[in-house]
Length: 186
Image (cartoon, rainbow, N blue to C red; front, side):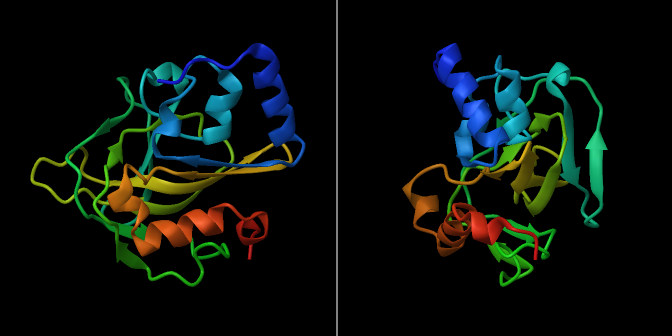
């Protein structure tokens, strides 16, 4: 968990994004700052130190239908690192329009049960845990865009270590997510 930023820095960052700035959240950044309400809204879904007070679970069932789960409990868990399929759920964004509908990650950590306020979230892609010890039965959100004021956040829950960073899909998503132009609705 990250050390809290000074209040002045939090306010400046919040103002920057609300006024049209961009922000890319990668992997464990979604565990950061569980006490900072604006940050929780910016990243859409988060993990560690969050419970039902911080929002709902969003995932897709195995038929590709979006599920919003209101159950109680802790947020954020992950299983063993492995390659798993990514399914593009929204091809309407430039960042995803040229991607295969289903592709594989590099060896990565699979985050499950992320919680959030689900305000202004567009799910771009989900991942499916490939183990008989699956953390959930569905497909968890791994790529999303969050509208925050006039700004936009690209949240990529992938990216545990060098194995994932060297995967072509991760690189394409990261570079696309880092470009305001590519995040615009197609």
